[in-house]
Length: 60
Image (cartoon, rainbow, N blue to C red; front, side, top):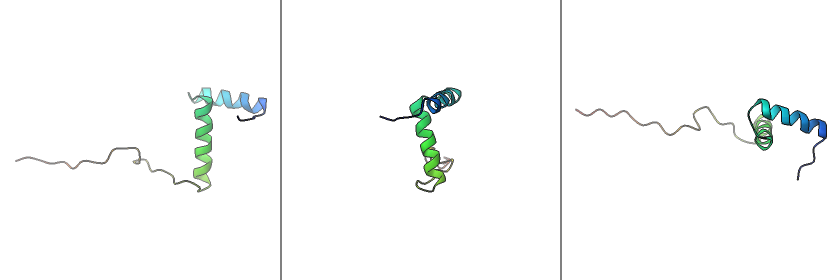
């Protein structure tokens, strides 16, 4: 259970809708950003979510 001031909850709902996220998704995003900014979790680089690169192999 999370207790949030009604005015803050209204603002959070609007923000989540603007970002096409659920309220839960928006809260997770906010927490993730705060943890990264504070240095408490490692920031992923842009390639962290990509599969490993495959070598180009040519057959002769």
